[in-house]
Amino acid sequence: MSEFKSKIKTIEWVDNYSKMVDQTILPYEFKYVNITTGQQMYDAIKTMIVRGAPAIGVAGAHGVVLYAQEFAEKDLSREEFIKQLNEKADYIASSRPTAVNLMWAVKKQKEIINNSNSDIAGIVEELKQNGIKLENEDIEINKRIGDYGAEVVPKGATILTHCNAGALATVGYGTALGVVRSAFANDPTIQVFADETRPRQQGARITTLELTMDGIPTTLITDGMCSYFMKKGMIDMVVVGADRIAANGDAANKIGTYTVAIAAKYHNIPFYIAAPLSTIDTGIKTGDEIVIEERSREEVTHINGKIICAPEVNVINPGFDVTPHELITGIITEKGILRAPYETAIADAFKQCE
Image (cartoon, rainbow, N blue to C red):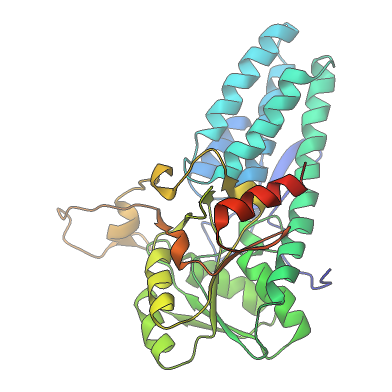
């Protein structure tokens, strides 16, 4: 397994609270904030203080612990404690609808809530330990994803990525950027082209920050430039993350990913998704069933608090799009690289976990 270590730890449980990087102020300031209540965690997920599907999953698990700690201080019966905590777990899971890792992690916590034989204090401790376990597992899973992905990265490759699927989207290594880190550990001639990723600029604000912190050569381009560089032969492969993957391999990722996939297909450039199995939702058959989050108009109409368009203009702001499985060369997971037909490959990967 790769020994490359990112300098970043995005989220971790400390004593009785969750500590995370505030990603809304990057790259101007690198600051940790302490989330001490369940409502604060809901707000942190909703406002994207924490973002990236795996990191949101861990945040959701932590949020359930925070609510459990709050309810443990009240004079509740064990039955009422469980009832109220289940309700708040569902509330945490509703903070962002597209990233399935959030629902997955909250479901893991609810299994503990509903199946534990412990008293209230014991349930709180079990939830806390499971949250920490999910943290540690995330880093190990990402490193395995990185190592599998590195096997298909050509020597001296230039890798295009979109949005941020790095250490700051996970606990501390990355999915798409985990592939980059593992490849770079073996071949320091690897470099990255990062799409800026409008409208929230995660590629510009976050991807470039963490890659340059790790000394990985990175070039920032605007979202509309990828086809230009592909035609010039300057992009060797594309690796992006995902927020939800359907049973047939259709993958939801940050808006603009579908456009990159179409361009890559036209230019015969491999297009890979890098994501843990927890991002795959076998309960939905195709990407048409994925709920796409609609975000606020201000993300589009404003930059750094200043309006950039006619105030009365109509705005539609979907946070994600879905890349059809036909455009995906492979899905890089902790169980290996899944390839078409994806229904079979995904089913086989989950059987390995049984």
